[in-house]
Image (tube, rainbow over all chains, first blue to last red; front, top):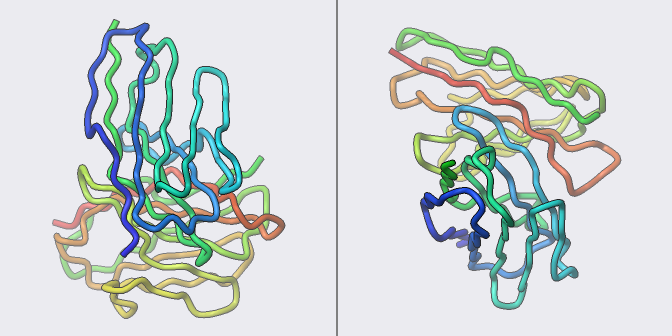
Length: 111
Length: 116
């Protein structure tokens, strides 16, 4: 069964900290992996997409790494800000065109 | 570009009634649309994959007679929750994939359904 686990489930930090969000997936036969942001009661915003052949992707203060063979991805958020507060979801894509979502990390960054 | 809309954004209905949710790709043609459901404090679960002009493919455990999906055009898919019950209350999100690209799914803003 394809499962995705995210650790920690929740995180509360003062602004300015560098953060590490972890994602692990049981089936390593992924096509790519995406990280999304979800604000309360809202839809999803795609943050980063890493192809299965890539090791990392960067966008601004966000950096995502991928270790496909070990079934892990990590999202790094540098110099966190209160506006980063949201739930972060990772989702590997399998060849069946199915995105499998993790349960998310709820992040709160306080001033 | 690549905007997906959903209507309505929220709906409250009585138990036993049917509710239709629309998902539209506004500036691109989507051969494939996906319907997800998200219960409180849980992640998104894929319900079904809908291809334009053909029957939807439902995930295991999703009742196809209860959740009717129609994808009659390249820009519109609808999900109808028939004879809704309180346990169907959830957040329903659709996504659409551009016919030109395989990878990226563009997500709608979601529809919150509350069945009384």
